[in-house]
Length: 140
Length: 179
Image (cartoon, rainbow over all chains, first blue to last red; front, top):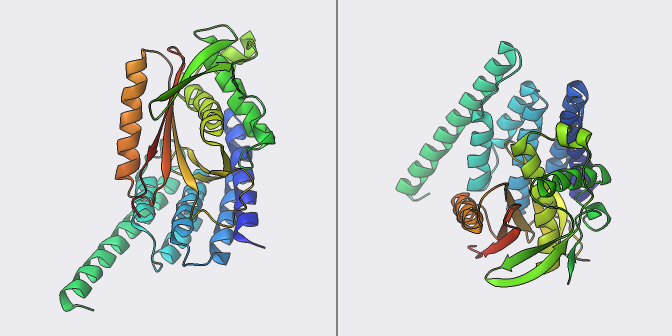
């Protein structure tokens, strides 16, 4: 299965989820967002990492979809995996913004997990930035 | 006069499913009907090159107007229908993919018939809609969107498109390729 096939499946599920949100079918929307996120993660896994723009767009989309599906446990796993990848700067920034979005509804436990994912991402970014700075200083 | 076909987007745009096309079209009908009756002539300003296009829609019933009373989400969805049809008309570009971002989704465009296996060369479309106000408000919103896209640090190309429903104006601006 190719990136395009997985991404198309993800887009379709996400689009259906949007319609479900508008129809006030909250549970169905969550399920569809999670299906979309699963497919987007699969798209990431088959993508040639040299395709950095596509990698960044797909990564942002996958994180956003897990958050929209309120599965912050899976979002956390994905963020952990992405931290080891060479994402383009726009993707790093957008993932930070998604994780910083307020979560006005949902149980406190979910909001708490999301906060911890955001903190983890911020810490990984700080570590990455200081590593890059050190590499620049030593010329490595 | 050429017509913007906002109704059957899913037949031409791979990224827009029939369900989403119906949703966007319904929203556009509500946005248009707030100020006008069908059909209307819109100015389509593509980088200063302005042409007139006709926009035709079905009058929404009371139930639809009530269900779509939320101004912001309806304007956003309605704007997507108009702007996607406008870039198709003006540039021959079609939505091949969508990607979720914070609260919404971005569309990615390619010329018709170009096969896509990734989004490396696709054009990102940044959409916005203005429900009420004069043309200068629409142009001001375009400037804001352009700044937003540039600040985004994304590998361009990208197109920003804004529709003003009351002044009957669509403006498009392409952002230069930085990388």
